[in-house]
Image (tube, rainbow, N blue to C red; front, side, top):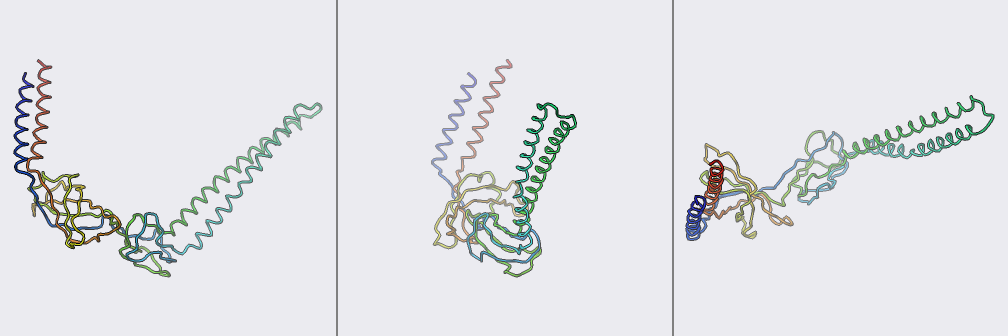
Length: 297
């Protein structure tokens, strides 16, 4: 009876709150925001060298894994070709297998023939052991050749500078023929999706949460209103300004909207939504506690 009474009271309270929330409607608040690239990467060379070719320029679109810059690689290319050639000598394994099979056949025939001396039989057995050792060595050489090829390929690949993300080239710092050491070669920005950064007053801390949507109004009217999704909310409020940061993700298919625009970020806040969630949680805890009390008694 106690559970039914508490549930009845809770349902009445919840119904009243829903009616009040419906009458009050949603509250729209807006704050200044900034549209930024989702990721910006300064791309450098893993080792010093001379730039051979640059395949892209500013504003060019690039795909993840696309070759952007090739460093001078004549030495690395020669080492790679040598490693590939050495690996082709795997025919030695086939040769040693054939010799081992032959040694086994000879040994089998010697054991069955009459009048064969012990020395000859031992010699035939020794040939099997020798052939097995040669086959083992051939396999080890093959393994080493594969490792050398893998190493040479990795060294050569370091000369091919690839894009780690899909996006656009923001800045090109080098040209063919330049010697580079540790300086960046290119700057690439991912602009699909875009990132929206907004600073919000502390009193909104419990009312904005990941997953909720907001309306983005860019400063340039030709881009119209857009819908973005909150990806995370800062867990620490800045004491000096009594604000916290919110980040949103804004789809930007075909790179139609540029980054760097200022915007307004509009949140539709339900004044009672969070309060009802908390009441529901407390009611569930109350029911669990009542159930436990009944077991104990």
